[in-house]
Image 1 (cartoon, one colour):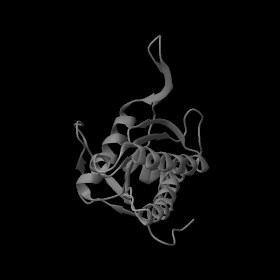
Image 2 (cartoon, helix red, strand yellow):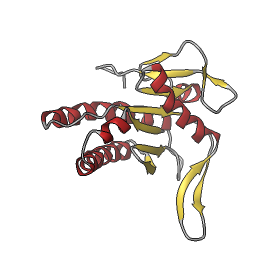
Image 3 (spheres, one colour):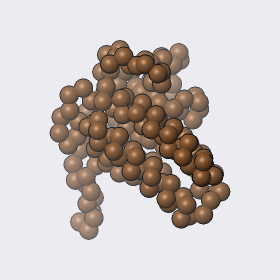
Length: 186
């Protein structure tokens, strides 16, 4: 999973750095709690974005459902946080999410001076590109067909009617939007 705050560059430009840092810290703390509740492991923070793994470093049954449930919970909790921020005169954050399922290589990578745990592979690149596709489609949460299949119809989704060409990739993908409805089936 990759997350991104929509319009973050404009938000950052419009406020003092200390206020922006406070908001990002609040957002990251909230997201970290949500992801952990659903078995997600944060790989890294990248500016305003987050890379999250389900099923690494250890196998996790039902990873697709857990990631989708975390996405829905993050959006719901962000609605509350945004209300508080707006009452304080601060800009809201609208989070976009992209998810893909598959086999990756996960482990410690880096140089002899600096190492970090991460995951690599086409699945990671595709998930990042799927997240970015939200911008062109005006959606908040997109997933690959592989993630959709792992979800098993337990949450409301909408198939994107045309196969999407993801930036930098040669093959098109079928994508699904995870829908935010009040009473999702369990």
